[in-house]
Image (cartoon, rainbow, N blue to C red):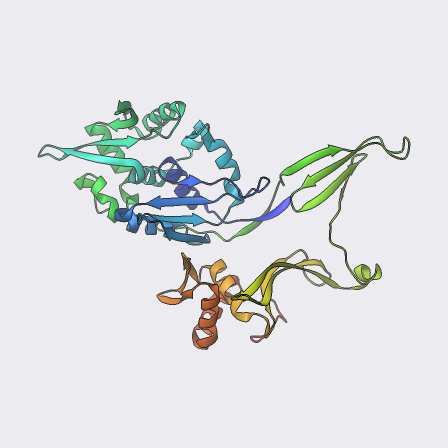
Length: 394
């Protein structure tokens, strides 16, 4: 089991479920045994305001905003383990496939996001009677039919499947269009109200709901299980070497032994004598041009008699100043949402801190008042310090 952060509220699950029906997508995990899955939003120039609104619904999720050469805009979330099983079930043979349980979980907000992504409205006649068309070409045939049944049974919306120019389209006639718009009207962003009948416009009222990050245990992906030969005569009935990403385990006679590759220096007595032990591992070098000026390290509390162990922190150690206070401020600012990042630019509200991490750190060095303000907000969002904890300068 691995401890990983879970960040999504039920409101945000609705956002992701609806977006996956439309233009949203889930990327494959970076490594062959990783569970972290990135969620991507993407739209053209005319829908940039709509994209930024959707980004605000996921405001507590770290991510990056970027644009391609055609000025299309995208947002990629940090890898999230809670999306692992959803991606595995949602993509089959190159198309999106959603089972009945997934479709039964769709809320009016999710339907609105799906419609704003892939739907269109055609107004006919002076009475402004409208007809809806939603593209469902990227979904499996079974999913298309399940969608039709779900709309009819749960929302009383009668929709029909058609093929237009070799593309699968879900259509709704006048009464069904009016009914569908009445269900989703309050969740349609003002920048997309042109897709609503005039009688349903002006009802937008959506307030994002965030939840506090929660650390949960998830099953680790097993890389390989290798049977080992029997040893020492008949003393061992069976033996397996189990490879798990980032660690190593042995299974002997039904007993699992976790074996860390880290060796503690200083003799065997140190493990038992010390009240606290930290494992410091280098991650990458920090360079100024070609000159190495420090290292980024990961610190894990492997033993602690006075506080919970196994906490992990990443920090920068610079040759001229030790642990970088400004680097930690940038990291915690991003983690708590006080500092945001779009492309290579770091921002604090309307204030641009700099392009690139080093420039953002330099800004904090040059503007101590801004650094103190950001630190205050970070501490406020991170919760109160424990009694007897470090002072302001620690």
